[in-house]
Amino acid sequence: MRDFSFDTHIFKEGETYVAYVPALDVSSCGATDEEARRNIRDAVRGFLSASAELGTLNEVLEEAGYKPDGDGWRGPEFVSIDRLTMSIK
Image (cartoon, helix red, strand yellow):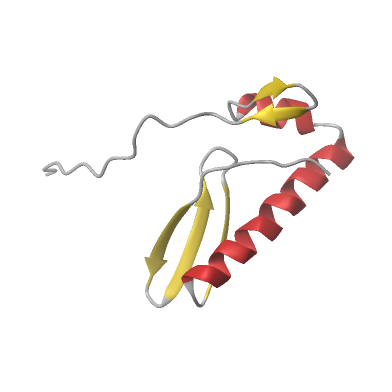
């Protein structure tokens, strides 16, 4: 078993906490922040497992910005996450 790191955005939609992994476009949710964190790990694990079974894991990770690193993968590093505001008509 190898470690796999990923960045997760957690936000609320109504009373539900949503966990989203932008690099993989995978999301999950929970009634609490911690439940959403647990559930996103399961969702990512399932997504990666299904990709491996289909033989597309390397392609999926490369398209998501991951780079091979020894016997594992190194994820993309974010420089910053900003909240921007603009006017729209």
